Image 1 (cartoon, rainbow, N blue to C red):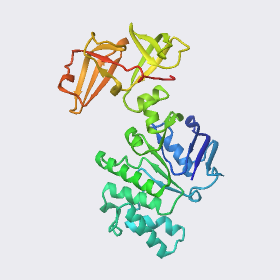
Image 2: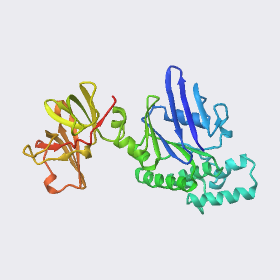
Image 3: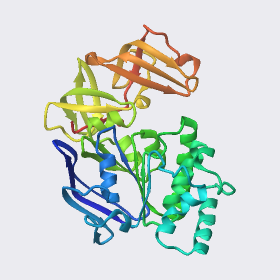
Image 4: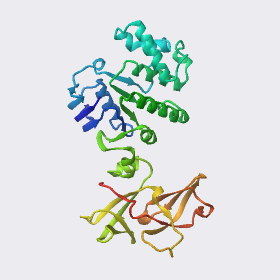
Length: 356
């Protein structure tokens, strides 16, 4: 089912938890609300679920406005951060709870639960209680309970935050597999950038209750729309460039950082400065000052981390800030010592011009 939010706002006292958010979630999408704590993502999810009513704006499921529809009539299934399993009920009875509340026949309940247990790979655990299950198994029970009622929309609020790192990776792959198999529209809340990129068709980045950026995982990573998006979605070097001209033939903006010349792809600037985002892995090591070509910069190595398949350097950057450089699949010749001068090159087609 398609979900549309138009101008959604929600206040709690003086706090503007969600501020004029508009977005569309297409039918069958795995859509993630991503942002730091306090950004409004869980509040937004709870308004979609019907637990909160928006102060302004409209929520549509398909062609139907659901602002005043109670949660149990919205055809949604919810997976909570703490799973919210009933400790005194078995796995079977936990999953069956919503079906019994809907007066589903006993035989159909057994059939549905048998099918969903296969989907979440919990066959044979029907009689166990939640305290006899691992964290990953409890998460699967919560997911099964949400799915067994055949919802039109699946809502998930930080469902993996209580699991250890290795189990989180396995469970996010499992959730994505089940979602693709069922084709159910899914709205997923997380603060974990890697998790969001791994599972999502599209991501909405939220900050202070407002929508910062909306796009596919590749779009929000490679083309961040703002400084917040660039820095939140992984490591990013933020450089402020004083623009000095425009190379019409090469379609390159020409500028300087603390007296060092740099050029980058972009439209002819209207003002005298630009803010650039450059991912650490986009920067290339250079052999030295004799190397030909543009965008050749240097700095003293302030710190380095050798991880075998990758070296991360922190270099004194032009203008006073640090520049982080990541060398992937390095050779022995790429290993430098702290205190050395490191020469590097920024390909002109890599920097992204930010809006602020």
